[in-house]
Structures are given as C-alpha cells and as structure tokens.
Image 1 (cartoon, rainbow, N blue to C red):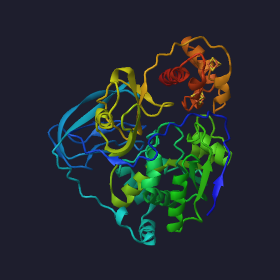
Image 2 (tube, rainbow, N blue to C red):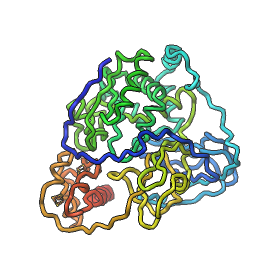
Image 3 (cartoon, rainbow, N blue to C red):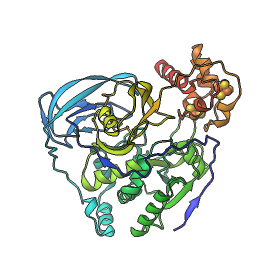
Image 4 (cartoon, rainbow, N blue to C red):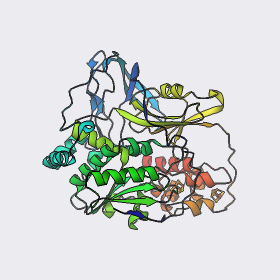
Length: 451
Ligand code: SF4
Ligand code: SF4
C-alpha cells in the first residue's frame, strides 16, 4: 500500500512541538485508593447515579446512567465501597457537577466481562473479523453505548450517537484521526505505537457500522514511526486495500475535524453543521481503541492514557484509571517548584488552567501540562491582522473581544462566533496579549443563555 501525502488546506500556525514524551512507553499507574467520578463525562445529558452511599461495587460495574440518547453510562474504575456522593466544581465547564467517591478495597475485583475474544490473544485476524461480522450494527452500537464510549480526542461526544447518523446523511467517508496536532501531547502517538492492532480492530468495527466508501487514517508527518507501524498492521491484517493512510504536514490545528475534512476532501462543514452534513465521520485513534475493547472484550471505558509533561523531572505517558486525582499523576512525575508553575488540563493551545489538584482524571483528560506561570498584560488591539491570517475557520477574531466587552452578542453572531473551533491560534499570535479565545467562550455562553 502507498502512503498518500497531502498539503495543508489552511494557513494555521507552525508551533514548537515540544513532544518530549514521544518515545516514553506507556506506564501503568497503580489504581488509586480513592476514585472520584464526575457524573458529567460526555457532551450531552449528564448521568444519574445508579448506586448509593455504602454500596459495594466491582471494577467495571455501571454506577451511573441516563435515559437520554445523547449520553453514555459511567462505570466504576476500581472495586470498593461508595464512600460519598457530592458535588465538585468542574474547572473545564465552570459548573458544579455531581460526583461519586469510591474507596478502594485494594483488590480490583472486576465484573464478569462479556465479549467475543481477548485482543491480546488473537492469532487469526480472519477469525475475529468473522466474529465481528456476525454482530448486527444494533448489537455493536449497544456494546459501544453500554461501554460508556465517548470521543477521546477531547470532545467527549457519545460514540454510539456519532456512529448512528440519520438515514438522510449519506456517509461516504470515514477518517480515523491520529494527527495529535497540539504541542506536548503524545498519548495518541503512543497508542498508535503500542496499541496499533487494537486501534485497527476498532477501525474495522467502525467501517462495518458506517459502511463508507472510503476509509482514511490521517497522521501528521512528525509521527513517521506511527505511520509505519499502522501500515505494517494493515498489511498483516490484509486490510491494506480498503484503508489508506494519509500523511499530513504538522501544522496546527490539523487535527480539528473541520480542518482535517477540508484538507483531505476539500469539503466545508457548514456553519453550525457537523461532519456528517458533508458525508463524513471522524473518530480519534484512542476512541477506536476503546471501541475495540468494548465490542470485542466487553470492557467499559474506565481508564485513560494521559501525557504528563512540561516542567516535570520525569515526564511520562501514563495509563490511569478514570477518577484518579490529578495530584497522583503530578507526584508520580515529580513536578518542580509548584509555586512558580501552573497546571493545565489539556495542551497549551486548548487546555484549561486548574487550581484544584485533587480534581480527577475524566474520560476527556488526555494531558496534564505544567508550564511556568507568566502574567501577560492585555493591551489594546493594534489591528495588525495576525489573528485573521492564522484563523483556520476564516473568521475575524479581533472583533469578538470588542463585541463581548460591550455586550454586543448579536454582533458576535453576525460574525459567526459559533463557527470558532476554539483552537487558540488567534490568542497565540496576538502581540497585544488579548485572550481572544476567553472572550469567544464568554460570547458563545451568553448567546447560548439567550436561546
Ligand atoms: S477565532 Fe476561533 S477558530 Fe479562529 S483562530 Fe481563534 S480560536 Fe481558532
Ligand atoms: S492579533 Fe491581536 S492585535 Fe493583532 S489584530 Fe488580532 S486582536 Fe488585534
């Protein structure tokens, strides 16, 4: 099979990569003594607890669910006893969320998993493909929902919903997204290196459900080893004729769905629309791994691979249970001089600064970044136009701070604020240190409140 090389279809920004952990093999962090589970782990409806204080639970047992279609159940990441139910401020949304705290019994006793195979023991790919083919799409989507799978590229949109496009949407293309364009983060890179077969099994399952004409794996060309590894696995599995790997230039924000679709297919997702409106579904490689584990092994989503990087003595990629306090990850990697640094949940471009180190890892956590805290003073816009030139969505970012400061949210709408993907490129290049994305988030929230 040949690798297709493409050029970027947007200007964007060339960022320093700082991928210090790209060669650090994933290490498993021991399960925590106490896990704190937030009951909003997906975009859409939050879950309600299906357990109560003092109940005993096993690892992998469902502990919260919702009747809404756009939601995904939550499972216990450890075995033990429910010690507390309460609320916590979510630093990402700024809202209080319900939580369940589980005290470990030190055992890690799992519920019995119902699957069709054990991924680590597969010695015949045709055999597992035939078992997957025997499952109906309804059965597969049910297993994905029951496994609590959500988009792990950061969006946390329930995966069974994404893979159930309405009948009027003709999905002709599926893109498996292995771009990981944000600096510092290497969790997807390591997943492609260490769980490549699981990722491709997930791709096979997605292909069966969507039945698209074309299937691509998109990877930035700064991850040549991942491209080679997945290419080899596709050949081993005899899938090389139905999947094409696309090598893309490393340019931010290549991994955003809309820029990826524009670059690969030259299709524009309409304002306020979704990739399915232009016949495309995009899933991240970590989600594909989770799909394979849920469908083949019956394993729910209770652990995450998280890059812990920046100002640490030993930056790492860690496999951690959801609900593990962030301080456990920070301590494992040896953070330097805590007072002078800030902790960011996510990468430097789209991440959120947090103060509560006890906030837990959630399904959406992919990076803990520690950076020096530098106070930047916001100055007046000098109308240099840099923010406009880098915006991958063709917006006029300089207008939003002005509108938001003057409560002119209607004008934000006229300037298509909801088409902003919050990539942070405009703030990054602004010489006046204007936190443009912060203003954009405020503008979007105000508009949503008015609806
Ligand atoms: S306006 Fe939005 S999409 Fe455009 S550069 Fe800024 S954050 Fe990115
Ligand atoms: S980059 Fe900053 S200073 Fe330049 S036009 Fe945009 S908002 Fe104004």
